[in-house]
Image (cartoon, rainbow, N blue to C red; front, side):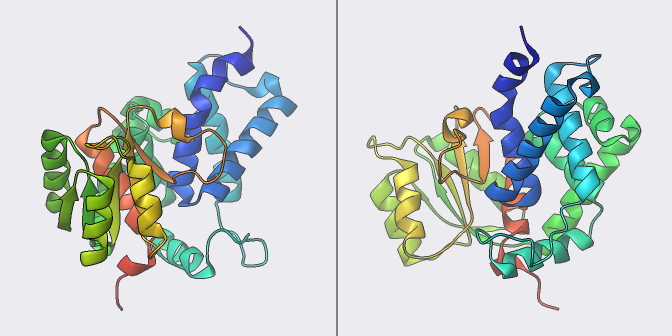
Length: 268
């Protein structure tokens, strides 16, 4: 099996990591593209002594470390507003890049602390402290009112508990597209957590499109098949949670989504 064939199944998840790290579909995909270009240009430099997925993320980390995602307004493109870029830079300045990477690699991407340590080039004993640092800093900076769109009662209750444990309020729990839109219009949320398939066979994606047509709000999609939403076609969600999920994954996704959102920027 060629290296390309080995890496292909992991690309949707690397794209998820890239966009969660940058808060942008465009910027995240740019790093993934640069990673693939580096592998094609110098295949001999690809780590062959580790699992292909681990090697792929290691190459991505090298690209990320070499650029530090610090784009100037002259170089920034138009998908993300300048205010969002400023918010991201201000918040990134308050925490070490390693702590956010450690959080995302373990909580969202499912790497072990040992693998995460390899990827960010620290001692395994440091990873737990870095994750705790990231969570504490993000939670201190972000608070929101959350709309949950989920038709499975047990899952909805679990998500609601996680949201409240993080210090956020829940505006409501919707089980259909129409109910989700009505709740959003009645009490505008600062974050939406949306399942894909809803109770009446309506779509959580359609519900989100309806909501976003009225006002902008960060959205996290929940699905058992995240690769189906990471096809390379536009538009794509920036934040995805894979079912079945770990509580830590939901916490990480919420923190990252709010991290880049203007409405939750703290008042000086």
